[in-house]
Image (tube, rainbow, N blue to C red; front, side):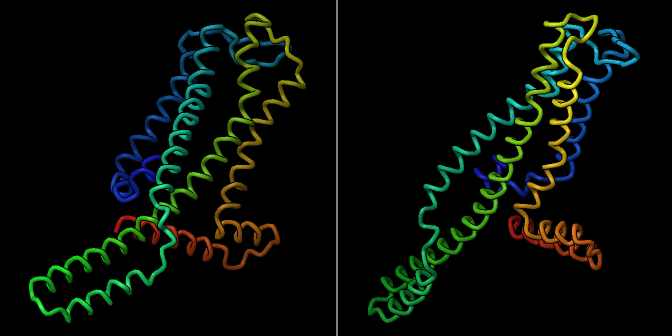
Length: 254
């Protein structure tokens, strides 16, 4: 989204299959770096009343919570603050985004008027200047359209990041503090508190589709039809929504 806001024309070119594959591979690699160390001897499993708990080893707790949550959250917050600043600067640059279309018509009028000029050299220069102005105005409207789409996507991303932080921060704060408060042998946290915070984190997966649906008309309509048990032509509607997004991407690429 940061590149989409700051470089709306070059961003689609950067989004290719190889880059996506690399990003997915990095995500899986980081996930493996969290889950595999205990299998090779780092940290020890703790079992209390036949309940297997996550390792309470100090080093592993700090490492796993940092890689799984704190570092990604910090990166997302920093990047979103940069997105907000970039969007604000871009909005200032595009204050003329509501220019009426008659400016292009004035460009045509300018061409016609200048064609009636008495001097050939001056007429040619005026025609070139007016044509350039009209072209710049059309290109700027295209840039503004792309910018507005990316700005809306950035707003959605901000809400997603906020929901992620709200849902998972309490659980990871408890997980980080638990071995330092209770020791590595057992967990002294109330079981009800642990379960409540864990399910609060799981709630994040529940509300994300609702957030996306709220900001996407096609998904919102489809979800509403599903809730009302209207399954007819659901696949067709989803295909139409996908085609709509593909056309948007094509417009951005062009």
